[in-house]
Length: 334
Image 1 (cartoon, rainbow, N blue to C red):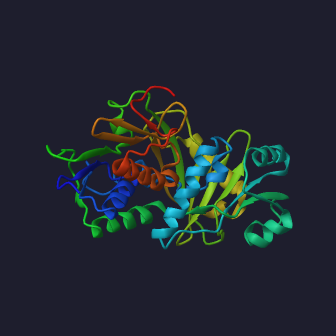
Image 2: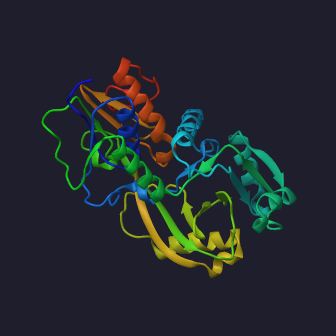
Image 3: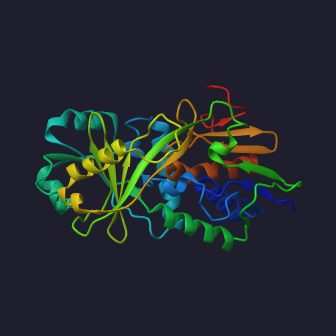
């Protein structure tokens, strides 16, 4: 191995996985991050962190499903707090067509009756007539997972430099995982807004993420430890970094109330937004420019794609392997 380090810019979910995989393969690695506090400026910290490759196929394609399944296997290998209880999709009876459409566009699910749903999630008993259950999906709490990865990276011998954007003059490779911070170097990169609310309720028990379909405002609710729940909306085509509007907050919380009325008495812990980096096709890209490699465009799939993209970069450095649908020499449209 070269004595010059591989330098990774950006210590979000993509950069952390790059650092972990490369260090475990014997490379000297340096991870640099501009924020003084870990994850302070990273969209990873406000992610939903659902590992849902089957559900994501409703609005993406088979590539995301295939890559996501490999990533779940990689998460299983290292992260003991991964929740592997699957996920659920439900809808109000008047919107049953939405559930049927979702079922047609995805695979990997079991169709449940209302009684079967109640057996799986007792707090949803008698609330929905049918559901889709995806047993092979998983979820995690993002801040805990990011902290775990940072400790793993440091334990693996990676030099972590916070509060700096300075790249050493000499390095073996530069791997850029800065998301929107790299848009001056990557044409076609855009920001996609995601909104979420964190609430606490002692009156609701869920064991897995639940997506509530709605023709206008679908949401997902993800259970976290300590009776916390993350309520998130799907992607919004906006780069606004302002806080969540009153209307958006009302829609998030009222739809959570529609999932379970006990959420009406929940405590609001936080409401915030994040901008996810994406290309026009919403596919991730590994862009090779000489000795520099850009890993970007993970869209809303950061936690589900970061592990497998790190594996791809490591294999490319080792023997030049390139996945034809992920690697590009520049950011031209495929």
